Amino acid sequence: MPCRPAVAAQLDLLRTRGANNLWVAGFPSSSSSSSRRDLLRLVPPVRCSVDVLAPTVGTVTEVDIDTFWPLVKGAGDKIVVLDMYTQWCGPCKIIAPRFKELSEKNLDVVFLKLDCNEKNKPLAKELGIKAVPTFKIFKGGEVVKEVRGAKFDDLVLAIETTKQS
Image (cartoon, rainbow, N blue to C red; front, side, top):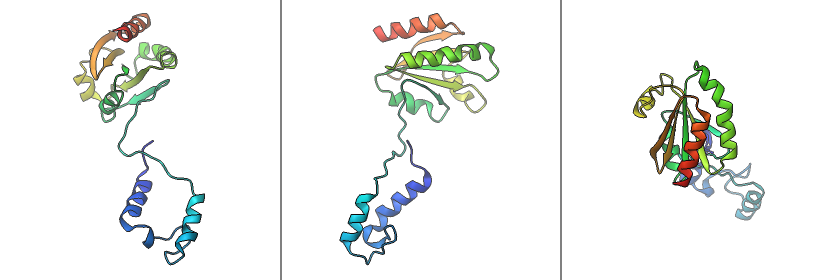
């Protein structure tokens, strides 16, 4: 999970000032080092990642022009299935729950959704979308299969054949 800006700023502050110049939970830096260390043992560590996007399996992840390629590249050797849709598309709405079910059944595959709105239009154009819904299947960061239309059986077959290749 990415750090919030405030947390990232605090981490930077800790790195630049060093522990001797900070107040730790109400103890000024003049307090004994052992009392500060004892107090810090009670505080759970904060863990977060900065600028790391990792795809999630077992769910459908909504992507946009900024997050799509980092997630595809972050998937590594996993197969990535992208559902390109629009808010106004009837067939897109009908197949969406079935696409979600596929994500829950195929835990070795990453499922993404891209709303082909104005913001994401350049990415949709780059991916060569001609109709919605369109499903693109990626392996190793490259498109290997495409299914146009709300053809669920064709999508399942495309995923299965990609897994076997």
